[in-house]
Length: 492
Image 1 (cartoon, rainbow, N blue to C red):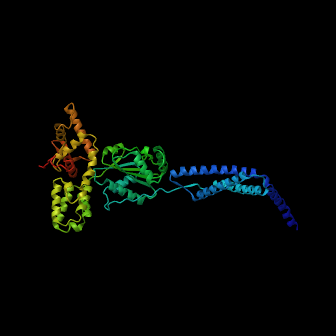
Image 2: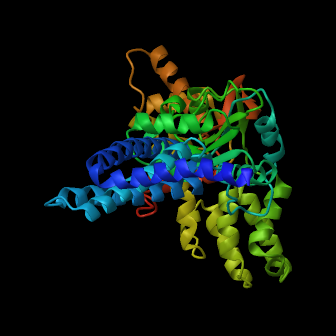
Image 3: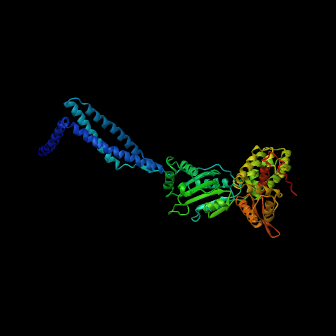
């Protein structure tokens, strides 16, 4: 009995307090509604802070959690309900016991919900870091570039931050870069790997926007804001930025790329670029340039077989002989081998093969009937010619095609030809020679001329022109094949 008495003694004051509190509700309605209004303002301020934090985090590749989404939904609902209670209280026209009691009771109940949501915010994980987008494999020829292994060695080491792959147009630089992308996507899936095609009219803004797009970062804002977005995303991650077909310097810092020459802890930072020019390698502070050269015979023949198919080549012994002659004529240039190989893959008539040889030996690759796409070879190579800023340098380059195919070109004789043709006009002969030799160096830097290590003539160094580059020069000189009588060049 004593225990029951004790329980009753404890409960009665509690019940009495609750009853009194409820009895007072009708007389305290305005106070209760004001308390709810103040608490709701605090909750709304918390909500706005959370939304701001989410916006900032999402620019850095974070995502809002399901927890916070549910919390925000509850806040929105409670906010509307609190506003409705306030409106109901404002609408009352005269004092009404029951109406005041209902409004006051609702305000107290909603006040508790608001306070509860404020308390919950502290324990909610607002955002979570998303994993970086997986590197995407790119379509690439099945044949492995002979430079892949050595280039990957530099990509994986701790020494070289910026690696430059350079060589003449059509030699396989893009193919190599795509293979590097695919190897990294398989071997280093946790790293950020971004492939950006730069091309001739490239700018920091273009590269920046493409990186933003591929990393799914916030696209809004100025260049400076995007710079900060990219930097904050990459600074504590290992990344490889692949820049294909670069024609001039781009400022990595302006784009937002953390300095690839200074890695932090276990993070590796690498930039790998392709270009036709050693000058671009210098402008980009490349410490390890990788020269991609034309294919050796075995690789060239294998590539041609891959495109033509052995079935076609083995269909006639004479066709196989012509195929060998064609590959020799193309001098290991992958772009030309692929283009001609694709065009010949279904040609079973030896006459078509013989005609192809005749046209190729006449430096008329663009006239070969079997491939409407052959012009793409010359147009691709012509970008290097178009990038020459000096018109006199363009004319000097075209004059190099006057030498027979594969013939060594004596440097001093070439310079004298340019001077004698009025292409170099300087105040004295020494200045003219200096300009001429600087022209040779510039043409070598973009692979329109090559150093000929096999020959010196009367002690003078020589250069040479790749056969397909020479064909392209003659094509340009003859108005891209429209007027073949502009220049008439015969070997011998």
